[in-house]
Image (tube, rainbow, N blue to C red; front, side, top):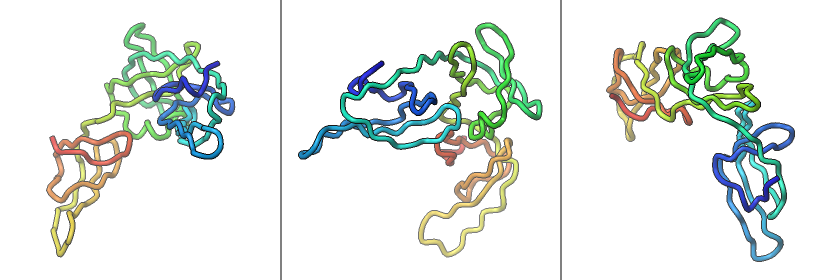
Amino acid sequence: MISTADFKNGMYIIFKDDINQIVEFQHVNPGKGSAFVRTRLKSLKSGKVVEFTFKSGEMVQEANVETSDAQYLFNDGKNYVFMDNNTFDQFEMPHDSLEYEGKYLTEGLQVLILKRNDIPLSIRLPRKMQLKVVSAPPGVKGDTATSASKSVTLENGLEVMTPLFVKEGDVIVINTDSGEYVERV
């Protein structure tokens, strides 16, 4: 058990019978009333982020989560198949457990596996990924007051808004946290 005073970004706690990662937290001490800790928690099972307020000094259970490097191999239709880089063991994770992360997986991608009791719970993608543009309409700039953008399709089937100068065959960098275009390589 840990106190809310021990919270750190990236820490794992058990909240509502689920393992959650503390994405962000803030200690608040209002002029009137008792202090509290406002948090944003990301569920490892669903990937959803929820906001919750704890009383200052409240005790919560810390979750022991191990991490290891792994490589994404392939999709067998029902599961994503990975290989642990340390033991070379292959393991599967169902599509519904990686609903958001699955759309970024490309063969050979190095990821971080989050495990508890040697059971894979989730993966952590690299923050930025390079992907090839396979379909892009020609950029026609009209009367725009701000920077114009267009929708392009990437090699993994993901559609992203990019500036007009991005064309088919370009390799671009995508932020996996937000799903937004960062730069052209």
